[in-house]
Length: 399
Image 1: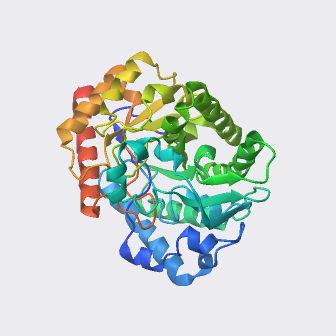
Image 2: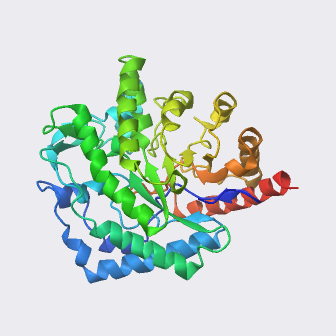
Image 3: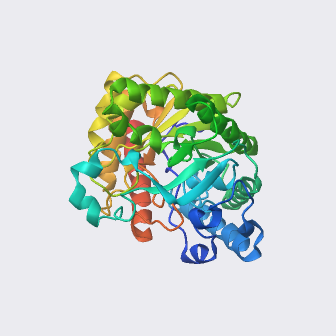
């Protein structure tokens, strides 16, 4: 994994806004395509029109990221239906039950704090619950065709864009055990531990495929933080036990893989809600730093979490590790001034050491194929601000 050796490197979290044509040719949503089945290969994988469109769009998005000044880039997650639910298209054991709604515990107590807001927000349609993802059989990774396809598209796009020269590098995202089937109900395994470790064993197949391809693996884990507010109401120890099991399962899935090729991303959800339910970073850091990864990606630019840069004054980043703080955010349409981006990066560099900081984003700009957090023009303007802010910070930090 590249480090900021002579200037601050830049990257992002992963999910980017899809082109309209790709959305039109993409598969239906997972609830429609997957309901009532378990671990089958989706029919669209072999459709020529979709595959051609996907390959071309990945090539274009990689080139656009490089042209925008980003150093560590990906495929925008264009081959996935969403940041997390995509995995249910690749593993066995689960059925989607649209008629069986499971509460959105990961929204925490904000559902009660802001009832009026939720009744009129983008979450209104699902605030009463979302279809349960029911585990009805053994969990296994049964279809690697999509991950092989997506990795091949990313690597080909990187080669065409000149990635691999200088500080340019590729990364690829995969979901964590805690965030897999986050509307899940276990009706097959005899214990929660057995269930979570079965998920981890399945995910290990995908993690190894990413590492074996030669790109950086990013493990996404929003739900580890999102469950805090709901569980901590029952006691701090309840959350701690829940989180510790899932961190141990993740490390089990990562066993044998090189830490220096892995980065771990946690966030507090992409949805545009008040976020009072967000966990304090200091409650999450002890779990995050247990993960066997070389870099940790966190939110640090939105108004609920920007103040938490001070957490790193009390929590040392382990030797050899990298922090990837978000210095631009998907939460607002306001484009951050490059000078502000530079100030944020300089703060982290002063505490952690400039070589241990990479400038990033809070979260993805499109957590699903049909989700768009800001207009594409705004997304690219934010990336430009990130690149320019990193340049300004580097001028000060290396002068």
